[in-house]
Length: 323
Image (cartoon, rainbow, N blue to C red; front, side):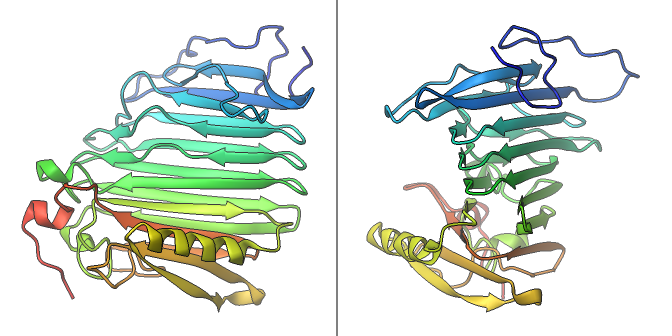
């Protein structure tokens, strides 16, 4: 097996290993690492490098649909993130490879007395490669503090589909908007520079469940489709809007708006029909901030929803919308 072209690869003949944590001064939390490398061989994508330090692990890749794509689940067997945890995942996709990454369940973030939980995912997508990163949602507990980021570097002809989803807490248990901090960012670059950047910073506050924010919905997700060489992402955003309309949700397609240096943002917003305002408004700063910028072609969709038969976050807390 050839050596994987990554900084974390040690050159061992083994395809996977778990190394003990290096001694460090006592502190709260654990440092976890997961490194994966993929290559395209004989018409299919294979895993060529894997290194991990608990509490991060990864299952064996499988070809679910016979197309040669590698689908793999990322694991944290400890059941969630504790205050002071620092988890980092690095993935490299070789030219022409196709990788789908997800998680088997939602990620719980537990209460912290002060230390922040940090998780970071870094992807290098080779020429003509395709990445699908679709982890399950994050559930912050009351008092939880989380900083998470996704960084993507696209080579010429590469593309990526990214999803960031989170719950406002366990709304059915009256824990909506009681987390301490949710700081989540996504940044993507290609050979021409910055392609997409989005960051959301929220402190737990009941007002963010009202009108003009999450509007009573218990879950929020952002889906980003990145393909610098694709010229029809506007059609993709329109198709998504039509699909959402057919599902019984009200969808609104926003027109591109101008940003500095000729940049633009293409997005679709969807919400249940009883609400009309945006889910989380870009640039809104009232104890929190949310903003996104993109260089076309890039499609972004932000959704807010509650599960069928589930009380919304506002209903669970008996709140009324705020102006």
